[in-house]
Image (cartoon, rainbow, N blue to C red; front, side, top):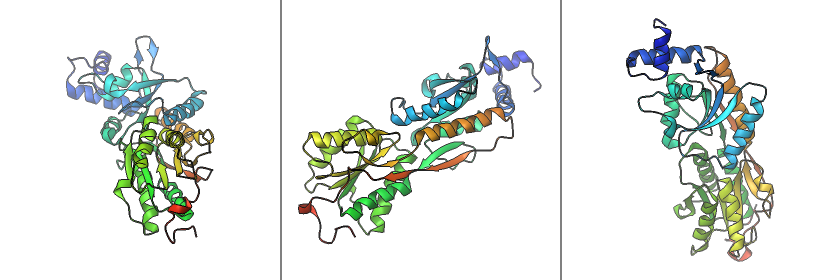
Length: 333
């Protein structure tokens, strides 16, 4: 490396006496050679579940991800820790330095469209990291992603074939690849059946319980209320089913609802929820397998850009629209 062990230590710890060029050289070589230093008396053996944007630790998606990661970690001497990257990063510190300071040897990253640059910076530094739930064009970024566009189109076509023509969709207020795929699947289905996209029926609500409640209140007061809806977040979808029935709208007799399910929430509603489903536990397991390979294989680990598939399940929350509201010629073929 051409520098003393003391300089390496100071570079890792962001000592102001180390020149920027030397610090960058040290960090690059550490990442290229997967050098794992000790921090004090402890080895760096943590895997970080790290948020580049807002923390969503309580979501079914994140819970299932960590279940899959933890399940795979059992045979390795790793510990799982949660990190808020915005809070953890010190001034003038690289992400690699921060991870080393925290005792982290690899990271599973959660992001949105607003913080994708953070993931690209980490990839540029060469630190072992895999993004989950977001796709990238940047060839240096490792990611595991489930494409829900095709299944979302299938879901909306299911509603169209039942006779629905006024179909609302609820997407997250935070932009990400997942929800964009689901919105595009919705638009694909309408276009395939020569139905226009009514911007009044495309609603953005928080991916939370109150988002689903807000969605039902919004469509309830519409002059020509939709007869069906696709909610692209699991918690919002379940909350919408509960709120609809609380406000006197029967599911599916008055309104058909399709949700998205990261886990097994569709079996906990009444009626059981028709849903686009993804195996988030599998995403977590795949992310850890890819990350472990990056950590173990010094320079030979291949880039990982893996796209998994979702599927569509029909249950009891969808039916034909109310007879009085059917449009001529709209009955299922």
